[in-house]
Image (cartoon, rainbow, N blue to C red; front, side):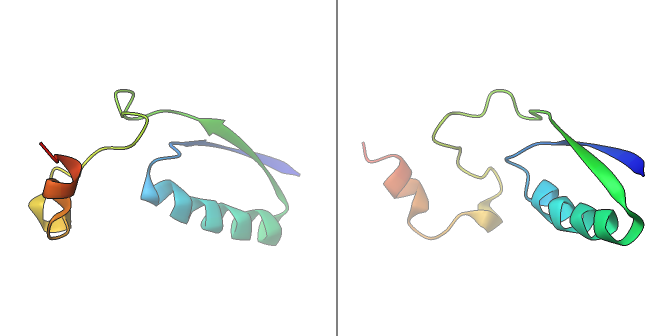
Length: 68
């Protein structure tokens, strides 16, 4: 059995996609997956952060995030 080591960031949507793909690979090729957490954005606040790209901001989201 081969070992596959994957470094992932729990906040990354791409890592959630990789989770599914790694599961399929592990079942198909009899791999043992070793998940290693890695925080890409180490300054991410506990409650999350607002997207920086305006295309991803929902209408009114900024007003809800900054009620002042």
